[in-house]
Amino acid sequence: MKKLPLSPPGGNAVYRARGMYALVADAAYNDADACAIQGLQYKNAPAAANVAALTFVPNPATNEVRILLPDGIDKKGVLYFYNTLGQVVLSLPIDNRQTDLTVSIQHLSVGLYYVQLTQEGGIRLTQKLSVIR
Image 1: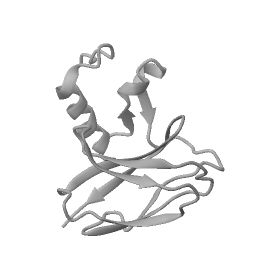
Image 2: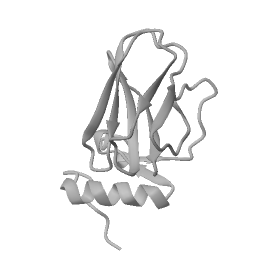
Image 3: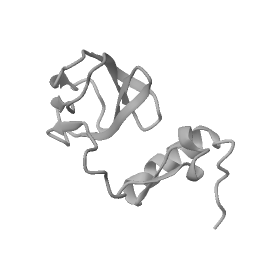
């Protein structure tokens, strides 16, 4: 089996294929980190004891989702919702010290979304959200 080239990333088709493969395999590709460890991150890697995370209630969600933010959000930021093609489909501003928010997702298509919390200084957290009907 041939390996896909890591640099250049391979375009939109490779991005889609990696996204679909991540649904069934124990690895997720991250082209933004392609310079580090071949751009491969393991989904089931042991987490550090004090690592904060985004939490979605419920997940999978249908019409509305409550997003619980970790402690320590001390700067304003933005929550970006990415579809599996890497397109931003929703962005929400986050205030400092905000602990949760409820979001209507009725306009989102059924599928898998990556929700990313970005603050000054770069990406802080990324988590998956499934939308079902």
